[in-house]
Image 1 (tube, rainbow, N blue to C red):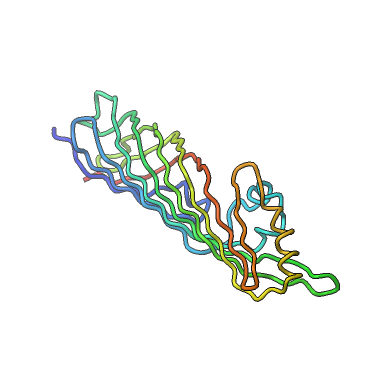
Image 2: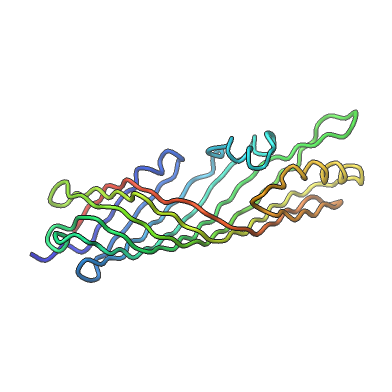
Length: 221
């Protein structure tokens, strides 16, 4: 019996962070397939906010954050099960690359002595490229319905960050903002800061790492 070659899937796991993730898998040879994941998240409050606050050592910087993102991850899968040809299931492993674009916004608050607090609206993005190895297994639930468990998928790469905020700042305000922004420095990223009379620009390049995982329901045809 010739194996069915196409599977469309919906990943349930990213729903915990308000992300929708869809996948398409195509068998190209016996026990080898190409799987592509596409994920997106609409603009909403930052998930796992406390983690970012701990990294930056600043409880207020991420308080009003919003985040949206888009991800694309093609991977090559090698199946080890002898049953794959006839039953389309079993353990797999393979390399993948991942591109992600994260867009976010926040309000940076500063205070001039004897004045009410002021805010600078900051908008920015993070672009990342990374590569890794994924391992998992597919289970046949019915003739056409499958469960895909991506157990582990560590990946490493690089990131580019840029944030900008436009606001007229006096010389005194520039000094205060420059001092307050020092709290963002950390062991993971070197942040370049440009503060002038027109506002703030933050840029950074650094390493990027993550772990892919998934619990996907798939329909094979």
